[in-house]
Length: 318
Image (tube, rainbow, N blue to C red):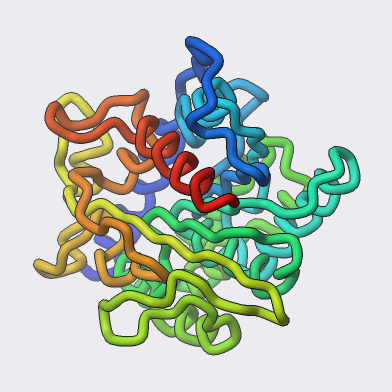
């Protein structure tokens, strides 16, 4: 029975993620300077995520264009939707090097959502000289109980494993990612599990909380390079009755057995570096302004959040 429920939950999560990007990014309404940071911003998606699909459907809905309209230089990374943190991190680093060579960029402000959180931390730990700051929204820093349960209930090479991997490869192909053939469900779930996260954290500890579910340092020095670390997360699951993804996240949220979470990541797992706020009234998709910008009536605007954070980076001279 456990395997059956796990399979249903992952299929539901996959469906929610695909549905999360069915709208085009709107152009910026005006030219401003609120988000005009010293260093460019890089947005990095999470598990089952994408930069855009067919050049039109964006993961961070309405975020890149709005940030650019407020003066930011923004790059959107394209990394494998279902692979190890290290694999995704290497893809990110290669893109950073390409942008740096093309545009003369010295450093970047990295922002990662979900599995994008550990991914940007990998980049910071590997090429610290290219990173000014690391910001994570609902980062899977200590793994996800959803991943733990699905991993335990999935037979390697079984029908569900094969079907899910095929679906993930389709997402990767639609984004034009060059590593589609490497996409693999269980590889990603191992990285997203509590055990996988612990192994990764042992290798890349910079910014780690000093106490259980606590805060970490707002700055960390890696190979002589000072890097700022920020983290944020939501703790609401069902925020809008008209958002079809809310029902799915309500189901996956039950895996946490009462622990505060956004439907896929717990509040404590999201903590890394300076925890600015960990209880936004958002679920895992609201955090990236999905689905279709549909959020709770009284919830803060996620797009405005990213502009506000860019402004924070601006005043920190980053």
